[in-house]
Length: 175
Image (cartoon, rainbow, N blue to C red):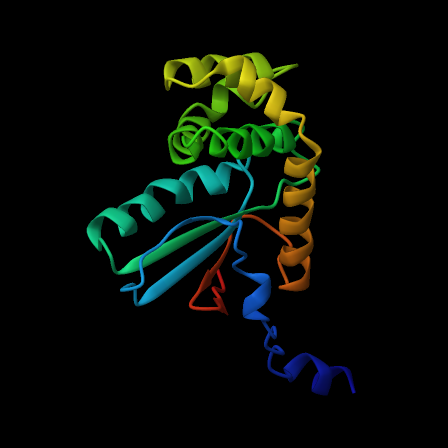
């Protein structure tokens, strides 16, 4: 019996596309795109940082042909991942989400081990022309925490258990 069980092909993960992209998801999209990449990611995850330049390159190399959607999936093993997710969502309220998104990945080594990374996120916000105090206040907005919790729940429902987890046109990319 064990041989039979071990020789069975892996069962496909059934993906509900409604769990991948929401109206409030962070996205860069056009109607002309032929490919949609959805990433469930963690800003403190070293592998997510490694994937970041390739995803940016796909967007710039194929303008108008690739949609990109980022969903938050901060892992409990990363002490500052939730705070980083809150900061990026707060930047969205100032129209600077992608600027802070890039900055958070680019400066991961600086804030990842900080006892309180909020001051660093405020510094980055100032450097990017945002209101740093508003960012800090918005980071504590319960609506932001709720949105991130919903991203995590959608990830769990879609078979996400590590980061980065990528979906290409609603199909789970197997690493």
